[in-house]
Structure formats: structure tokens, C-alpha cells
Length: 194
Image (cartoon, rainbow, N blue to C red; front, side, top):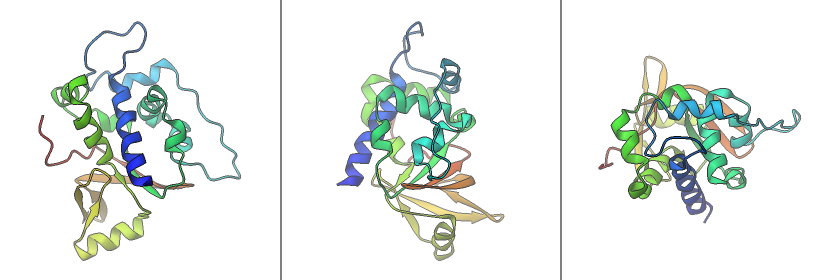
């Protein structure tokens, strides 16, 4: 039940990126426009230092995730992202979003492609706890990781670094409702047709 609720919420969150801010131009966003959302001013959450932050609180405390935080805020899904989990989120930074071609971004943010947008975003979420050690075990066994999109992605080790679905994990954070692994690019499903 929680898995499907999160799939719906994450889809709604990503759909929020197609909403137009007051005074912004009409039409789909480009890859250059997405990272600039941080200029609109994102209020940071001041979480209790004695309490471990959840996924949202961690993202709000780090400017590198301002695009993600803005999308969550626009979609009004803050409380859902704070659910108990467990979740493992592979979170692209603002810079990572720039690796998507403008054509792909335009098609995914087109109002007619909401289902494809949700599919791509849920492809970044594994509905379980996967610390780095567990991901290393999966890579050593040559097994794949099940994502909330319903697809599986490979977990590999290359030159001593862990890759999930082709995205390199650059750092990891334990959070109250699971794990956040920062990745260097979005994980695009192989079966995505635009």
C-alpha cells in the first residue's frame, strides 16, 4: 500500500515541474530552466539537530537539491515525502538534471505525457532500505534492484564506485525514512518511449 501511495505521490511531484510560476514563460521547461528554479527562493527546513531528518528535510537543507525541493513544494506533497518508508531515493542534484537533453525534458514536461513523467521519476525510488553495503552486495552477486516504477535496474561497481541504472553514487545519507543516495545523473528507464 505504501509503495503505491509513494508511486502516485512521486508522479504528482514530478508533474509539478510543469506548473508555471507567476511571470514565467509558457510551455515546457528546458534542462537549463529546471536548475534555475532555486532562484525563486526555497524556504529551508530547520530540523531538530537531535532528530535525524527525513528525505524532504535533508533536501531542504542542501541547495544542491533546490530543484527537487521546488517540485515537491509546487506539487504540495511535502507530507507524503515525509512518510515512514522505508524508501531508498537516488536523488539527482541540480547539476545532474542538466545532463538530460532539452528535447527529453520538453517531452517529459509536456502535459500530455504525465504518465511517462511519473514513470521516470518513480524509476529513482526503491521501496526498501538499501545502504551502500547492501548495494555493494547486490553488485557482487550480479543481481538487479527493483524500483517503484515496476522495473529493475542493474547495480554495478566500476573502478571502486557504485552505479545504479548507470548513475554513479557520489554520496549517501541515512535519513529517518530510509536512504538518500546522491547520483550524478537521472536514471532514465530503458523502456521509455517519447
